[in-house]
Image 1 (tube, helix red, strand yellow):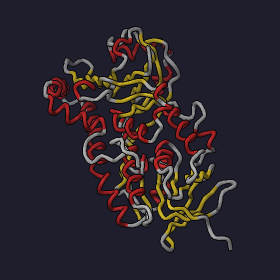
Image 2 (cartoon, helix red, strand yellow; image 1 turned 60 degrees about the horizontal axis):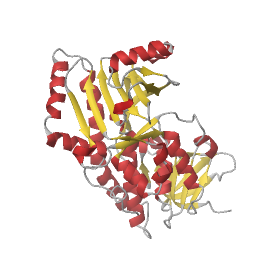
Image 3 (cartoon, helix red, strand yellow; image 1 turned 135 degrees about the vertical axis):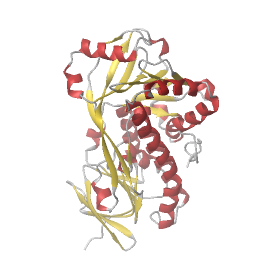
Image 4 (tube, helix red, strand yellow; image 1 turned 180 degrees about the horizontal axis):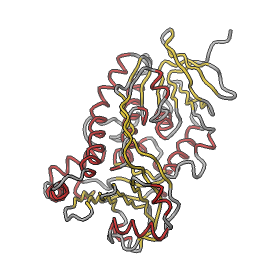
Length: 405
């Protein structure tokens, strides 16, 4: 009987998070397999995912250190200011790159641009085998490894992994099969995303987060007069049914005229929103990353940024532990201790914003406005929030600090 192919690390899921981890491990002596349900051409084709990514300062540093950013710089817009406000209230808070002593707070670009570049890099990576289209449909712990059952044309029926990295999304079947429970809560609204143009792009390097009675609205610079928007609504079907003029008029009423007139609306897409938090990050010879570990509300744009910090930490531990067992209990404990505090804080922050600005209790709206104004006048509080938003708080990985693995 032919022995099953064996790998040091098998990554189940080749989306942005799984592909980023595979690229982070490029050049290491670790034998990597990336298992992805879509064929490589499907992962990067136009329209696969029209969502826009707001990359934090830490994410920029990770991608720059990995040598990815040079291929993205020309298609990325820069964020130098973040402006937070509530519709109908005077209080605002502004965080600027100058105040924080950094060249930029972050960047905005389409997710498929990142996916395309990651998969181009994977094609040249000698230590990574891509198995696609394929899925991990089962696993069991056997003789110091995880025996993985695969489904897909032209792939082995079984492969072995000393460490399984679960990156198959918020509704992860592998997470469930590993016996890891997750708290899941649907938010009472969905995200409508798309692009538009503005008549006065003078604040074109400002990311706006505006809280309205119907939900948060983010408008992000995307280069020149083009901006991306993320609108949360409890009735997305009604919003999609509006013609372009009516939809833009409703956005204008919620946002105001800080960018002039909103115009030239592009295609709109809808994504349901939910909070998913795994009750633990590891199982024997397995670890959760990305949405399999934590799926967040898009307010403040923290999802992929948090996931990149996760994979930067995991890659560092794996590379530093070369020659040892990549699925050892000690390594998994080290990873969980490193990443759990950051994950808890970001989950609490994003969910707390939705709870605070979504509550309609009498007098609370006035208190929120006063809190925003007070926050803007207290530099230490602003610096603390900015460090978390930038991903520069707590223990930082070498990739975040600009040091190659």
